[in-house]
Amino acid sequence: MNTERTVKDYSTKAIPSWCPGCGDFGILTALKKALVEINADPDETLVVSGIGCGSLLPYWINTYGSCTLHGRAIPFATGSKIANHKNNIIVNVGDGDGLGIGMGHFVHFFRRNLDVMVICDNNGVYGLTKGQTSPTAKKGTKTSSTPFGSIEDYVNGASLALQMGATFVARAYSADAPGLTEIMKQAMNHNGAAFVDILQPCVTFNKQETYDFYNKNIDKNDLTAPICSSRSEAITFCNTPQEKIPTGIIFQEELPTYEEQVPQFKKGPLAHQDISQIDVTDFMERRS
Image (cartoon, rainbow, N blue to C red; front, side, top):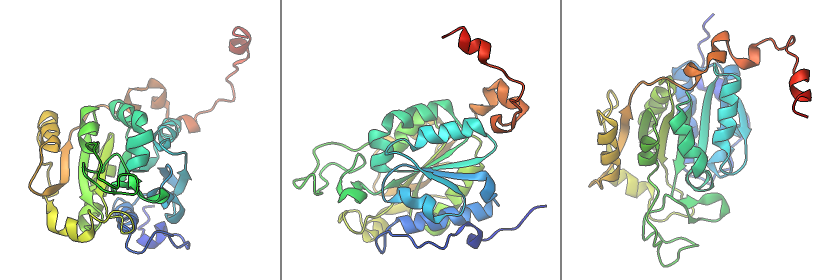
């Protein structure tokens, strides 16, 4: 029987500990609304995070959840998807978490094209550890670790995901609730590796990319079709400075997923397969 769910079904009684006005509130709300719109079963949904402000999200969403190590959310999610590829798995990383220490996992995940959505809380700082410059901070950004302005250019997560094979790439804004919800919904409905770069203000430490800044500089694109029609066009689009910051679905294509190419999965999720008659004793003895 198909059960109609509401936002309440994905909510917990716990109250988020984020700073008042944090962009993470918009991300949490949009994710719940997107789960409602796709009618996701909480018992078949897993939210995986690393370490950071936004990575506390699994505590406040009523699905299965796991807060893993800093930068290690993606490999944990990969293992979970391999164990039960029928589950809806969502990875929530921060810009420092996923594009700093977790960069190696980030690039290899997209070349595998697992059917998982990765969302990145992009606020340009390490908010949990007092606002140091993160990999996505623009050149010249002043923070506690770069008081005279960062001399490094930023990591372009959307461009990197495209170059490594992501089959759905989008950019959203945490204060645009309808747009973010729709993008998350489409990313979860997409059959393949999806990346959503979410621009969000850090009201405590990032005094440059504020709500006022984004409200004046966001250029919302229509969400009925991707902005770009080819991967090469999308990479060029992401790497080309725009007068305003474009949000929307940048690129999407259908390719065989990792799960569709593993013959053992044709029998069903590995977690559901009967292994009672499998004996590995001989295998272990021959290698001891």
